[in-house]
Image (cartoon, rainbow, N blue to C red; front, side, top):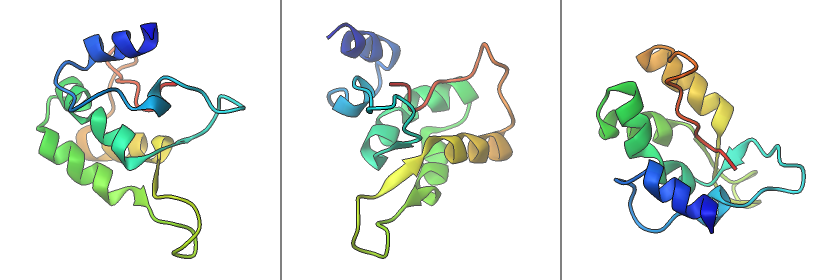
Length: 105
C-alpha cells in the first residue's frame, strides 16, 4: 500500500490506478519486462523528466512493445532496458540524479 501511495505521489498525472505489477516483484526481482499498460502509466513522469511531450515518449514506447512469442504465446511486453536505451538515443542521456526509474518494482 505504501508503494502504491508513493507511486501515485510521484506520478500525479498518470492515468488511472497504479498498475499492480509496479508494486509487486517477480520471483527473482529481476524481471526486465513490464506490460505496455504499466509502461504507459509512467509516460507523463518520464516526459516531464526528459523535457519532451508525452506524445513523443509514447511513440518511442509504442515502437518498443514486443508482441506475443510466435504470435500466440505470452503477452505483449516492454523490455525496460531496451526502452530506456531507445529513449536515451532519441532524447539524450539523463544524468543519474535526473533518471526516471521506469519499471521499478
